[in-house]
Amino acid sequence: RFNLCRYANEAMSLSRLTVKNLRNIEHLELSLGSGVNLICGVNGSGKTSLLEAIYFLGSGRTFRGQRIEPLISRNASGCTVFGVVDADRRCRIGVQRGRDGGRDIKINGEVVRRASELALALPVLVLGPDTVDLLLGAPGPRRRFLNWGLFHVEHGFLPEWENATRGLKQRNSLLRGGSASSRELAVWTDKLEVLAETIDAYRRRYFEKLQTVFKVMCADLTGLQGVECVYSRGWDSTRSLKEVMASQLDGDIKRGFTLSGFQKADIELRVAGQSATSVCSRGELKILAWALVLSQGKLSMAQQHQAPVYLVDDLCAELDEDHRQSVCRELVNSGGQIVATGIDLEQLQGSWSGITTKMFHVKRGVFSEMESSNE
Ligand SMILES: Nc1ncnc2c1ncn2[C@@H]1O[C@H](COP(=O)(O)OP(=O)(O)OP(=O)(O)O)[C@@H](O)[C@H]1O
Ligand SMILES: [Mg+2]
Image (cartoon, rainbow, N blue to C red; front, top):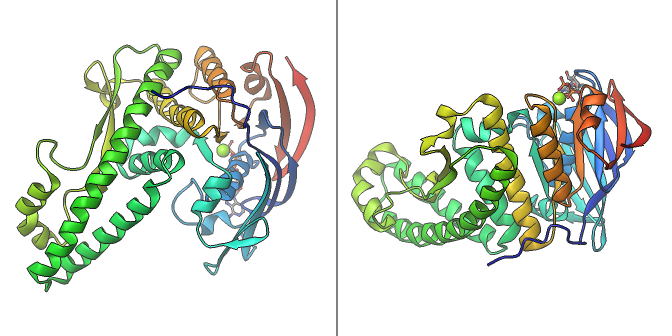
């Protein structure tokens, strides 16, 4: 059994942030509080852009689409974000991306090749209007969701997953080429079978723990009865991948890619036995998706004693007062640093009863700190 230690002391927070040429933020220097930070401003002022800047620092990527180019300010050749992370030790991180595709990551002054190092230095989770796509959209983001969790709690997972992904690429390129000998194919098939079983074992173990946290989270947040999350591994649950791949070999050769395997894993939310997406209201789906992400953060805190930074975009949208308050309570209990945005200051402030918040106002990409409140 694992321990849920909500109030561990190993709080990590992004204390300083410098942003250059990211969307409508030309130049920004910000001191963030280690607790709750609220950002308000009208539509198009730069609230989501600030969250994107922090996400970029923790991943080298954007959460709006796959391409990095739209992130770079229109007239600039590249964007840069620096940050100081206060944890057990202080850590300085910098990420730079150029329009020409160049990428530069530095941690404590040293050049780093892998973006995964950023995620270790500054784990971030996003709760926003699009988080519901985790339930409504294609399975890719759900697999990335599982991977995020595993990456942060099981350090052996990433190399296995990278190996398997490389193996899958090799097998698919052989299948596409059309001239692969059956012996050549068999080598990659055998490797993939072993790797896929390992990844499935990691995922199942992680999923079980996530499920336990998620159930409690759902009861606290949603009021829905009979919510369950179901994991499917990506191939027939009654047969080994070896059998499945053998039976699909001819089809794989015709298709030019591998039909079944770890790359097809998925999770599904059910409410009283039915798919959540077919029975839940829009607001319920949003809360369920947020509950999944919050559970992931909580599990990472429980296992690694490190709470992520929560980037909460448009906190008040689609949520009624009660749900807003429950979400804020969970966020505060998570022990992580929070940066939350909203259009209406009063509404944004209203749900953090008794918690001191640091507040900023943003207008056309320029941020100014407002007087702090302690409601
Ligand atoms: N590459 C870019 N260069 C310059 N400006 C950009 C770029 N990409 C987006 N913008 C602009 O940046 C502004 C800020 O966008 P952002 O999404 O941060 O606004 P927001 O405050 O979150 O608004 P909303 O309340 O509508 O969500 C918008 O006017 C947008 O059009
Ligand atoms: Mg926005």
